[in-house]
View 1: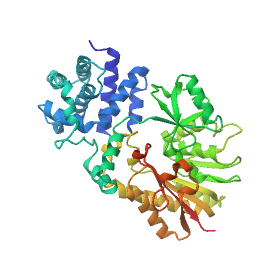
View 2: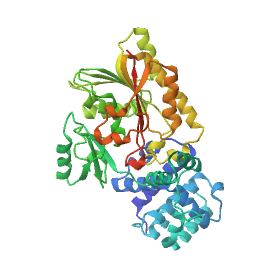
View 3: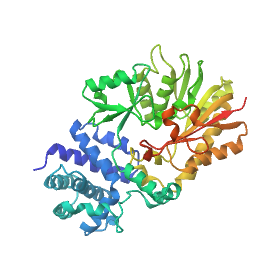
View 4: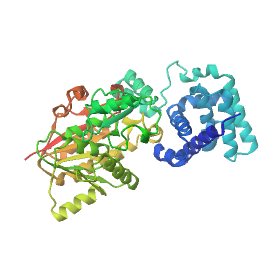
Length: 458
């Protein structure tokens, strides 16, 4: 008999995936809103299923095409996701008995108010798959015997042309794996060595990162994150190691400075800036999205950067365009440095946000690029002569990276590129590409980020 709690986990997984299929939104938000009240173990199972289905959709659909008598394209999103959830457990979660995977998914189908014949259809498909569980590995490869990429063809074609076939396949394979938990130590409160010792004392395995001097990689921590040693004390922020190499590009000042984080998001880079800049520096952090702004405030407060006597960050809810207009009207003081971490396609962070691969389209790239160049234009009047402008994305696509920089420089002759290697730690300088820009990729052991430093003439 299936465990009722596990049935709840599977129901949450099907509900989350169905909502995403009907109206795509960030999968982490959808999952948190649906599975937030599950017990920790059930939440972990539900998350493993949701993210696993998205990471291995091509494999699952290849198998379903063989085991189903009904075409996938003609199924409702709820039915399709129910079958994928059941098959994912059979193909990828060997610790779950086949009977539990089938029965609990069938019970989930019953709760989904499917008619009896459709519940029977789900049961039949999954039982046929369960009978061949030991042979399901044959669907992991395509008709030519190559591992399935589990990415849309247009994206694989782009990456193959840009990086070569071997690198493209490596990127796809890494995107299909659960990434490690990467932390940035808040050095305003504790040193990396001391925090590593604290984690080890708590029985948590961790090791220093490869590139960032404040990175720790935690192994096998089951969560929830809030129970990790030092969380409430603000000793760390979850942040990929590639992302930890953006804020240092705006460091190196010896006296207090004013810095603008024009697209602060959840505040990962904002907090890092607060930890790197000289005492007395001030950071203005802009974020227009209400959900992100609320999380930005929570993160900065926990780290000690937005409240109390050591407050360094002024978070503001709003867009760069409106802020620049107000600053111009009020003749506000110029900034010494500006970070434009622009909204982008996110193709560099697919291993952490697997839904991105399925919702992006080729026509999205020029749309993002138009918004990105406009953000850079809006930042220019806010930067003092001699100031530093850093443009960053979490995209692997040249249209959003160097092509945006080329367009900007063609319009603004007062700006000159500076090599990212001037400010990156020595351990990360291997990630500086031709032309001096920083660019990491999943094959480097971190997420894919791009950043270019632009110096304004005096």
